[in-house]
Image (tube, rainbow, N blue to C red; front, side):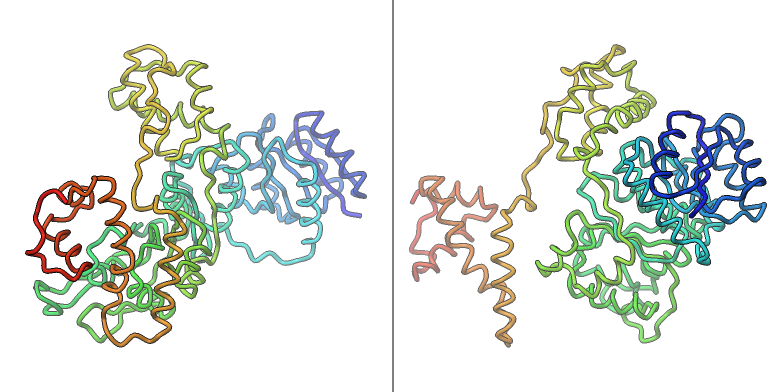
Length: 477
């Protein structure tokens, strides 16, 4: 029967946990302070313990550190009602077995205690002593259980060398999470290099990523290291990894496997030492199924996965975030002196398609419109004011149809470079037909909606009918 020490200054918590664990067959001792806990440990060393962070006198994390220095290596579960990323990292740094936030589910407590009990006698291979604490561990804010889980996962993986894949909707804070991983890692003194290859010129992606040698291509007037070499000794962050061009994914996979970078125009590989953190804004398995992300590259990127919740999944964090953004807005010239209860209720009611980024933008605007008073609901932008339709709004059925068509075309081992032209012949006619119906046959208006020159549209329509472009007029149909 394992002996469990519960250390919490809330009598009701101690009573509840003692009864719960007692029914599970554990021998339980309780203490209301760290000082009482030290005495209890000397009298009868426990097999495992649960320490609240906020205790009268010595706090729980300091107590945990003292126990470790005194060579008491039993598993310690840290419990807190005020968790943030810094608390989670400090708990792991001091060797905590796990990290729970109040209010917790009783079944969760039993499961964690069982795991801690099962670990007795096992030699821990965790090393958290190299974790470097930053001055601000709260860039990722949240008291919700969903964010507490994020904090715990960051704290656990940060001091390792594992590659990390961050999954979350646009605006949910993926780069903040990546920067936190770097800040609390052993590579914190090295560079943090964010890379969004989808935003780079396709013809220059390889040069930007791998570097180039003088004379490798027109305009390469000098040797230039790439972004991967710039990340030497630090962390490289691939933002929106599913946007990496397929040809580059193959070469990037080789770099990650061999830990070597070869500049464009060079034959000599250069060793590279950096940690990889990547992010995607949708389910990574879906990215593989759609053919936009190679499965073998995903395996390399996803050594450990962290999923960031959408803002609508952690509504209880909205007041905390809003207050933080209001302070920042006022520091930049906003004059609001607070947020009314009605405005907070309105913020919590909204769905926030743009996530934390949209919330920040709304508070910045409201802080100006409030003109020194409280932010009220009418100071906030209309709901969904910045939900802009774009390429990502193309129905999933269309995307899937194109993927299937391309896979079928490639399965036929094409020998000519006409895949793009063949696809256009499939998709352009129905698109043109719909637009022309919408414009009542006015080709000039249709060309404007399509973003094509009128001559280009005229030519394409003529080719469909087998007529010469000159046979068509340039005005009304």
